View 1 (cartoon, one colour):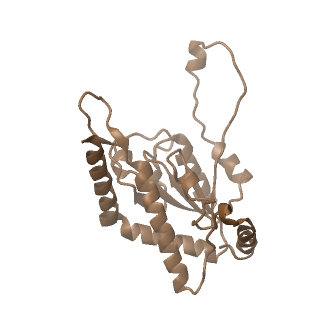
View 2: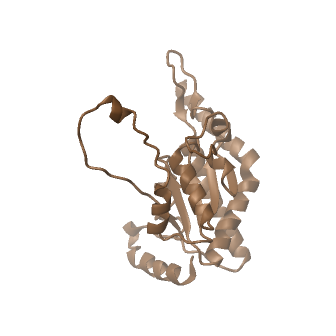
View 3: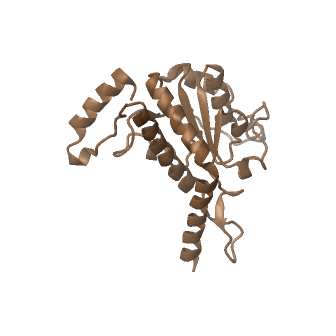
Length: 242
């Protein structure tokens, strides 16, 4: 019974995306095509909900979108004191260093996925890159994000910073199914809908590029002898931007 309920919840989620987000999806595809034609980077950053890995360097996927991932690693140990626990762990300001160290420049397209859109990290990244002239697409849950407070000192959430917002239609808390005997809903929506949305964005980009008489590179599986093919595709990408 839980399996059938889960299947229906996924069907309903995807239908809601189709019914409410198609205009935004097509606009995102156009923004991707514009970036390709202008030879600008298309960068994807996600806070752990799949699209970083699913949408970049994937056979059958576009070569142009690239992953942005970053970490701050401090190798340290010591006493777990009240003073240590009370320290402000806000990481605002790190995004400026990330921007400087990345391939991003003004005019690039940055796609950020965050179901709540509230963390200081994602908001800071969006604000910083926008201030440097990048376009920002947010993939977030408006139901979720509108009911939580921002951790950023600006008070803004991701959807309040982005140039284009696509609602992943995830519920507050992300889980889709209330199960008897459990306090927490089961089955997060955001990862499934994010991937479903993003492949449609890529499809919309392909359609837009076809209208312009252009053919973006699609990666081939290395398991089928695709390494040489993909190397040529990378050379072409460096020359054309797609």
